Image (cartoon, rainbow, N blue to C red):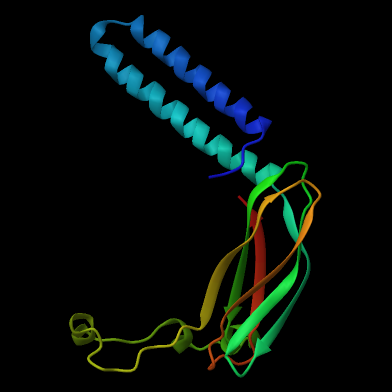
Amino acid sequence: MTLLNYWHYIFLGISFLIFLIGVISAFRQEKKLIIPMLITAFLISTLLAFFSVMVVDKYTKKVKVVKIKNKRLLSTERIIYSGIIKNVGNYPIGKVVLEIKLVNKGHATGNVKGGNFYKASGIVDFFSGGMGMAKSKPQSITKEFIVAKNLKAGAAKQFRVHFKYPGYFRSVADFVEVRGK
């Protein structure tokens, strides 16, 4: 669930008014048109409310990573990301989600081969589930973490997340994205 501000309430009110206008106009029609018009008014107002909440979220909930660093622990095969996130918008944010994507050597260095994206298989593999064949290792990993809740406007918060690091990754490129919900 998203944290609502007054812009959300304004657009939800507008979509409710559109629904009311649709209901009133439906009952002014002949009987066989009432049900289809009610369904249409409901669908239009629901879609408008849904998309307006998404658009308002996109433009009012602004968060950025101020500082980030990573450290790999070889003994436990884990990677730790720590840093500071900041709400640069004018409205509070309900949840701040940090997304980290690690991409292995071939994609990071430009040494891309067809085998990185496509693993050949036959019709027998489809029905047998591979029959003991070695499973292909993923070349990219994406992890999401909730690093803050109810972050006030202008506030900053430190975070620290960790996850299992694949031992077969070499020359990794990492992409960090943060968004408010």
